[in-house]
Structures are given as structure tokens and as C-alpha cells.
Image: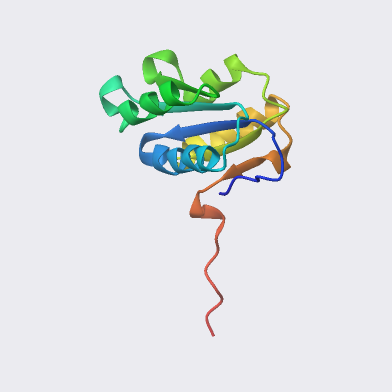
Length: 134
């Protein structure tokens, strides 16, 4: 997953658990390029205690006015559902990182909310197939 710096399209980022690490890297990449496009990060975990590195994400939010961080815990519902409640996102590039089931639900939810498939990027390895042996 890489940010397309040839456009100023806003980003919608969805990270579950330690999947927040690649999302944080995307935010830092946007900051390094001096972009001022809007970036919304939705970070999901089972509980507030499970929001790995949330303090860093909140510090980044204070530093960059174009960044909004939205922690989501299970008591608020599933992460993809919470993201869709904040929409619309059809004008954003979406980036998803985290557990496979969350990414799959997230892709389905975003498509259902009108985000074009070509604007959804994710990092799960299930799509990679092993090379043929023989």
C-alpha cells in the first residue's frame, strides 16, 4: 500500500489491532510530502486497552490539522460499520490493514457505501498465491 502523491484525493484509513502500524506509516508519508489532503484514520480494537500505539496517533492528530483519528472499540460496534456511519467516503482513497476478517468486512462495507473498488487498497496476504511447484 502506497499513497498516490500525484493527486490530492483524501484518504480513509481503517486499521485493526496492530494493522495500525502500516496506517501510521501512510500518515507519516503524507506528512513528509507536505500534503494537506484530509486523512481520516479509524482504529479498531476490542477495548481501549488494546488500542496499540494510540497515543502516537493522537499526537499526530494534534500536529497535523488535516488528520482525524477515530478510535473504535467493540462496544461501539464493528469497525467497518463505524466507518460507514461517518461517511460518505466515495471521494476518498481507502486503505485497510489488520486481521483478514476485518479487512474483508471493511472492503464489503465500503463497496456497499459507494466507494469504487479501484479506490480500495488493503494489505492482507490471502490474495497471494504460492508459485507453482514443478
